[in-house]
Length: 322
Image 1: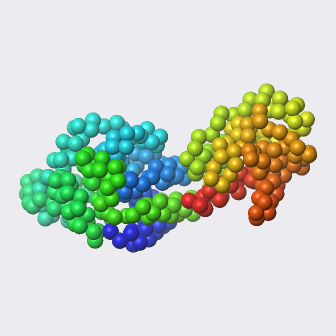
Image 2: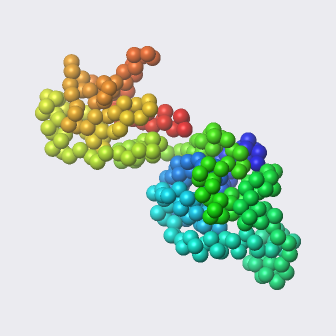
Image 3: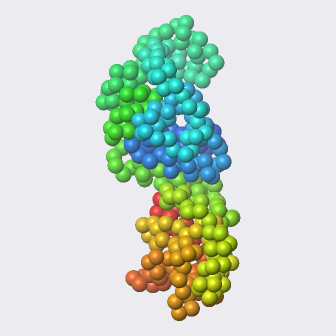
């Protein structure tokens, strides 16, 4: 598979194709990433968030549904988005997939692909074995990779749905030789294309915090209570800015990130020289005028008009880095 050509076509589909074609491309790419041992969950989660469509769209035929089920079994866990998928009897699916791989195909299959009569023709006029499927049935990843080397979008669903092979790719096999860096680059490029196609700006505090946590792959703490906020203001002898209060009502602080310090819960806030220190280390400060200041001794500090503006800026940096 030509990685550059695939990525170019995938970005074009995400930006310009109709909705069904977009979903097919995201579904194929997610499986491609998963079979390379990469993190496909981030791409699927973002697609669901911006389109509002259910994950069942990515597993809308028997082979793709089977592929995800086999990958989850091999991984030993199911991501949250997969809760929408119907649980499958994997032993029965394994038998069905073996029959699918070894079924002899008619020369008319490609002509009639998708037609209601395609199955009837195949049953009445069986022809030759399919070499690509046969390689999977025999567990020969090398032969499969050679056969699909020139294909612009290899059938990774049939690959991942092969139970014995699913465990091998999850363990690190890379039959398409995608390399260690390309899968993450591909996921990041498609997420950026999805953002361009579906531009969004979180309206509420819960949406903003959820977007940040989604980008980080973290979970936000529970909200602070009104009693927590009042006690913090009594201790600090100041009134907290309204937008910062709404932030704490949404999540009582945030864990740190690679480029952002831990935001303190209400119980740990402290004041010094008329400013409220809201992070550890003390790199985010709230002034009496409600400005949020990011302290950076190397590149200079930045004053944001509000605490929300600071977090929106942080979200933008997270999205750009992906």
